[in-house]
Length: 244
Image (cartoon, rainbow, N blue to C red):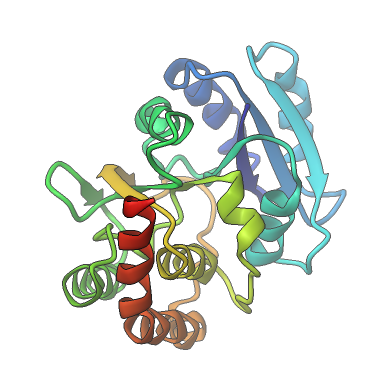
């Protein structure tokens, strides 16, 4: 079964609209795992009140990897339920309409990682800080061209991972949303099969963003250089897999 991992921090204004959007948009059977830091998180009361009327399973999981979004995502991904995992945000930024297609590609056995891509034909980004978007687009397109990484959107957290990818990779990220970039470039270096499909990202309209560009940028750069350094290994591993 598919597992959706949703890190939350005081998302009381967004959590019920998210649940309703999932019910409308996703037809693949799935479990929603909501990962929180504190028992007094304002997300939890409306989540619990709405859970019974949702047509999918919801499980609450307390962050066991250190407070903050990185710890929450790691906690959700390390929980070994599901044959595939997708990280989604509670702020309705992600394009939930493509979840079924992402899972179809993973469950077919053709791909191990499917990236929602804002920067390929058909993808787009609505709102958000322009400088953050410029850096993200530049990083994604340059890695695509320079290393052959099979997605133009390396930094996007809206990615689906087959269980073998998560089992094979030791997560070393230290801050924020760099984790998706780390998993993607490491998966490529190990020869896992990656693809992308167009995705629309929409900036939040309620709540407060926790994205800290200045603080997290050096951590993204670490994985950018990793991708450049391991580009040859990734190409060789993919060729070997195709031959076998």
